[in-house]
Length: 141
Length: 141
DNA sequence: CTACATCCTCTAGCGACTAGAGGAGCAAGA
DNA sequence: TCTTGCTCCTCTAGTCGCTAGAGGATGTAG
Image (cartoon, rainbow over all chains, first blue to last red; front, top):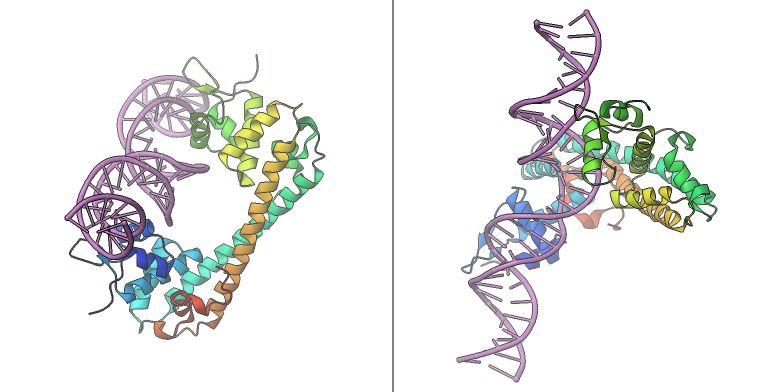
């Protein structure tokens, strides 16, 4: 007899919220666990591990589809890991792109905020800049 | 008589897509324009300007509610601009936070990808790292 | 006159959850 | 034994900011 792990306990251990766990089950990301006599979900330790894997992957920004693929790979340890590598590299490129674009936004917002003279809206640099894109620091966007 | 600006033309000039313009009208972000005899939307130049303002604001990541407030401010030039300043500063803080967290992700992903020996899944650092959060470079997340 | 582009309204879908209704089960204390 | 209160169940609908598609009307160029 192995330990009884309720959905609440699984949530605590994995860091995934209770409704989110049920949602993952619903979309087929997590297999439906056994139920107790009272119809409650009863998880095994390896299912909680799987949840932790999912959570970490989500934190790193992987989409549900990518995670499905990664989970299949995890279940097939003798496969070459090229696919996993590819998914991670795609994600890395994506993150780098986001950082670049957020840095551009940051610069723009900083300029807006710095040049605001805290007077009336009609002289406000914030509103002014939003209205006239061509006066941006960088026209990259 | 001023120029006739169709929704398609407004889209071209503002850089906002046609269905998105209709959506903005529906949610009350953009006032409903006049119609031609054939029931087509007919925009004025200042409405197209407003669209450009909205677009730029969205590009900078402001939410619809924030943009509504900013538009009200733009329409009231004698108000103090403290609110606009506040909204922009909030957004700046948000962007800075995102950049920080994306940089952490980037580091983690880089480590995963670099340490992958391109062998089998069972020795793959990518899968390994996802499964065991505690082996992360930074436990910040 | 005939294509074809553009426009109209309406509904539904996306991703990844989150919130809430309405009810059942279960453990612990009085 | 009863009651309190927590956790659990299912189900539906909402979030944000669009985007896609159906099915039809109108406008324009050759």
